[in-house]
Length: 240
Image: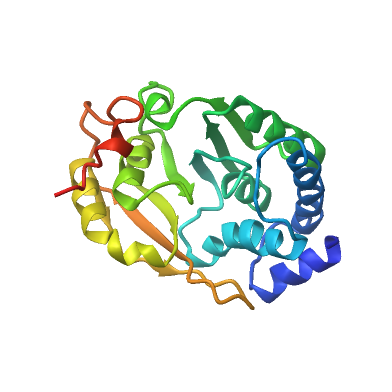
């Protein structure tokens, strides 16, 4: 896989972004493979699938109109940088915060930012529940995003406390979403959010059922949320 081939994948998926995106993604891919040999970043071994499953899947949201050209986005539990760092490369005027509980992952992301000249990022070491209680982060973002992290009701508690009123929590989901909608709706309501219709985001040439679940922030999140670290996952708000 090289810059030209990545550019072709972007074009075939109708993704319009910064002209140097393919080159940056190629550098990202090379560093991902290098670092993955000594730390657990991704379990996808093949370049073609890595590009589609991580890069293209992160970028298909650009076709929905949910990601602004400017403004602010926080990727909660960013891991190896999906979707947040990929979106930062595609939207250089968008201010992107990458939050993760593992410092070694942030070290990798800093290396990628430096190698690609990606300057519109800020890295924060914190658990999702703890970060949302920081004054400088709580209800400060237009978008809070998470990919492959947790069910919709748990994601609501992880994400909505970061989102300002009128903004969105965006959840990257698969076919299991249909079984999560009711509990997700209940949790979002308690947290000041309102579920909107899921948006299909297919990847060209793949039979994956990928969707974005938008949760609009309609009122402030009550001060008692998020609960202490670990509790949202153990006792989801959306449970009957």
